[in-house]
Figure 1: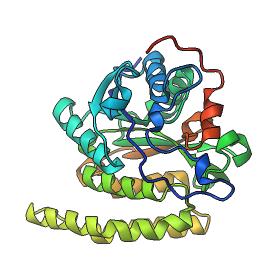
Figure 2: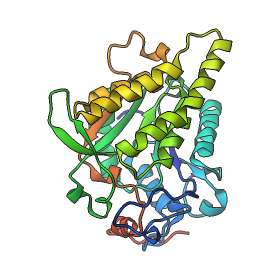
Figure 3: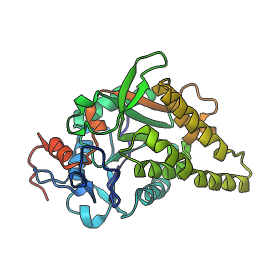
Figure 4: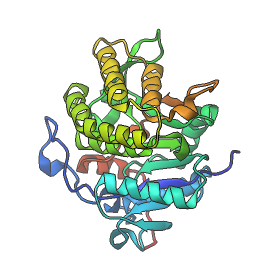
Amino acid sequence: MPPPLPILVLAGSDRQPGHVPGGLDRDDLLTGLKGAARLPSGRCLAGELVDRLRSCGRFASPLLFGPRRAYEGHVECEIVDVDGTLAETLARVREVLRSRFPLSEPAAAISCDILPTADEIRRLMEDGYDPHAGCGLWSQFVEAAPAEMGASAWKPSYRFLREAEGPLVDVYPGHLAIFRPAALRMRLLIHLLNLAYRQRNLSMGQRAWPMLTGGLGRLLLEDARNIVRLRPTALSVQVPFEVLRAYCRYRRKRLSVPAFADAVSRLFVAREFRRGRGGPSAVISVTRILSFGKDIDTRAELAEAAEGVEVYHGG
């Protein structure tokens, strides 16, 4: 078995609820610290996930990023105390990675609000990640028809070609990522992930323009920094071009999952890492393990995820 990877559990607060989708009321949505929500078993959501991550055998002891006041005594792992926006949490992640781990080696990050079983985690790692373990960035799409998603059927799905010549399939974003910090444009990635999170629960068409305009200022800043360091730079041109090209192909129903991963690579993987590689530097696997696409945003989803969770007798 490959050596265990460091894994970072993102368990910050959700102070600004996302767009309320049609068919739901605002009271249906969970807000605040979703990872601290209690399951009927007595354990909090993040605590249950941490236990499953330990049990799967693929990761080192998890590090949970969230407010100590909410999680201390409720999760069996180290807590990195941070209480802010997603951008602030990810900035703290970057600091910890730089100070405690080899930046050229892979590390994993997972949202606190999904509940795959230990066996599902192992299967996704073996089938999805292990064949591409040398890449700079790996994640997954979950292939499913909306009717298969249970209480998560309201979430927006996206239509991609499974392969370059394959059929169109409905996919949902997965919530486990593995990356080599030295291979990524971390500041840019953190900023755009924060923008994407603000637009969560919206369709691709509704998200494209806010993402593009909201990211332009960061791109100009990154270009300025690179000019000072005498590095070649054109992010303020390259990134909008890649985003618009991928979006146009998506709208024409001609964007495949590998082509999208290639666009992600050109956007977020540093040129030095991409140069001379025999395989892709960013990979998005397609899985049928639905739990990785079922992030828990509503009370109904929390109740569905709690089914079958064993009673916990700890703190």
